Length: 340
Ligand code: KG4
Ligand code: ZN
Image (cartoon, rainbow, N blue to C red; front, side, top):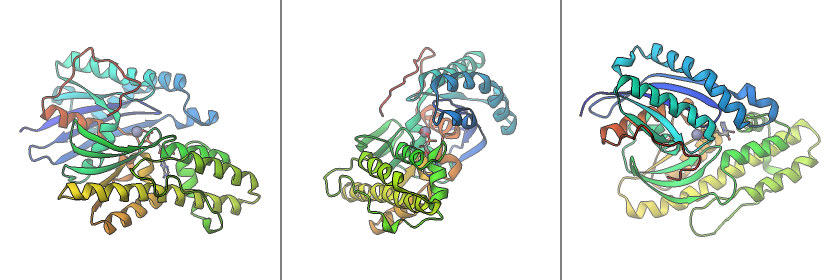
């Protein structure tokens, strides 16, 4: 084992991000820099991410973002062992920008290119801040994904359950919209919920009692939209936001508890990790931690900055792949869909 220093690039949605991460021979991780250039202001007037605007914006921001990440890291291009870039899944116009940039750096420096699955990045994100030994049970909850996975190591991940309709972050975003909140809806809804009490609303509990660990948010979305239309005051809306947040957290917790029951019979080391943008939600984190403790599991959630999209998680996935010799071909393709 040797010291590995990797530049990571992330451009699959609405953040242009670059980061330099160093992995020590003993596995310890140092994030030397993590720069995130958010496009939120450019998409906000449209109420969501506009793919064409995102792709153009990545082209404008990528070089400056990489330069800042390199400067802040104190490492120069000669000091890099590899470059890792998100190759999918995501908005393919954006993915192509980061991946092409990564190819150019790899070619110019004569270092390996590592194409990283965005979901694998989220899966290792908790390891940026603290040792999360493999294997672990992962709840991945973001704007595009909602799934439970058994993570045995890099490249060895098995899906145990997934949403049959919307992702959890998507549910947050859509319901926030019906409450008149701006994009992105998740953080806005959490803020509104802080002043509300959802006890008076009775929202549906999806798939309750059903076997397996799949998720569904469409019933909740429909019910919330109906109730939102009846809200008259800001207090009504805050109460509904609180009820919605609790309902989403409850479903995530119930399905995770089911997965923990099953996982616990097959593994001695019991660790539940949550990752993805929705892992930034305080109610979600608290409820999951409580359930984990009740199931005899340890619980880990990444620091907030590593929950939402960032390039440090891509760099770390790249470093772990490099250590295993899993490098990519220079003509690797961008993939809009790429299930783990
Ligand atoms: O992981 P991420 O940055 O991008 C994807 O890969 O999708 O996740 C973004 C999602 C959005 O749906 C956003 O509304 C949600 O995560 N999100 C939150 C919070 N922060 C971000 N949802 C609820 N509460 C939050 N605090
Ligand atoms: Zn993501």
